[in-house]
Length: 360
Image 1 (tube, rainbow, N blue to C red):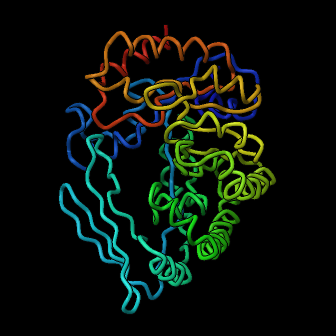
Image 2 (spheres, helix red, strand yellow):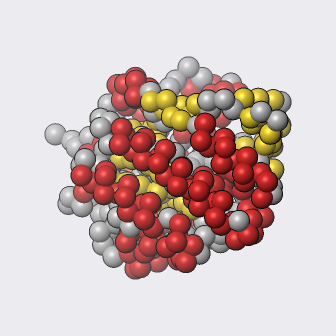
């Protein structure tokens, strides 16, 4: 009797003996974009993500956000076109504005952050006090039913408070300078955010899923090990302890150079990371990441997402895939994947080639 894909995935987290080469491409971004725009391949126009994974012969990865943010007295105004998005947060006479544009990868890129000054930080503090999370666990049921044993469904947390503050409100470059200049105000916001995230984690620990994802998009170009120790380490440690007590695994999403942070994530109790790979996207090829982490940590990735783009040199595509496959075959805690997600403009022929190589 064959082992279901879900078991193979969970074996990578538990450390159970499993010599199968597991290739798990995260198709959520690719599918979501093409489904919304009606640009899925003709034969797949009416298929769900789970059905497309079955057609490709790969396990399913789905993630669900079981909550909505409620803003209390804050009025949130959204204005969106095909290429641009503006969101305005209004509380009394105060307004914070963020702007986005559609990137070449089909995802939204933030080009203006809401907090631009010390005064804006004070406004953000008032707005965060108004904010809460509405719990919606019923979102999980239809996805769990659709995926079954053909893959796994993870629950998405809000980002870690420090990642929220920088990624969503301040921005990495100017935001870091503002953080240095107004640390006391920032610490007040971080404490409030930590309380709010902890309330979500408490409920997430009771969900009928095995993997919890903190979508922090970590990048060591902006978060040094010192920053990690100061602003993130305790937060991860508390979350990991809560989920381990409930028999769940905590995985963190990364979004760039991450090698210098890996050992700190492991020390904080995190069970695995998504998005590890070598250049041009990151600095943590599977073998290098394993060398610093030791054997008891789950790595998902290995193949840079750029390698699936048509303009990426074919020989480098083949080289990066074969190198990652060679490591994954010898490492039962590796999930071979596209770091971190299959891009919107992916050449499906290349994806199918990876699948064929893994099956050979």
